[in-house]
Image (cartoon, rainbow, N blue to C red; front, side, top):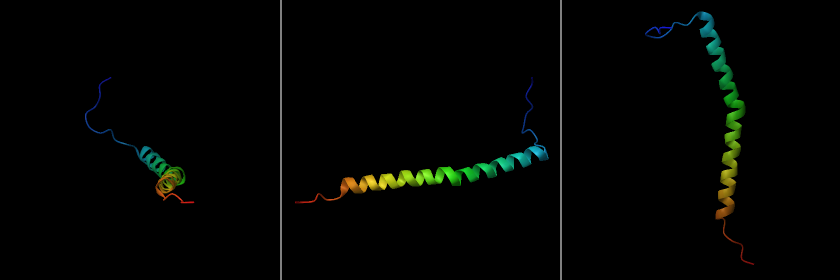
Length: 58
């Protein structure tokens, strides 16, 4: 089938569905991705701290 040149027009329903999907994805980013990145950053900081602290002289 031949492709039309230019952008395909969206219907109102498609546009509304796309916007709702974007809102849902933003919610997932806040609830899943950001806490996971925080945990990874915390482990990285903890690892660097433990590896660079001075040795205890007994």
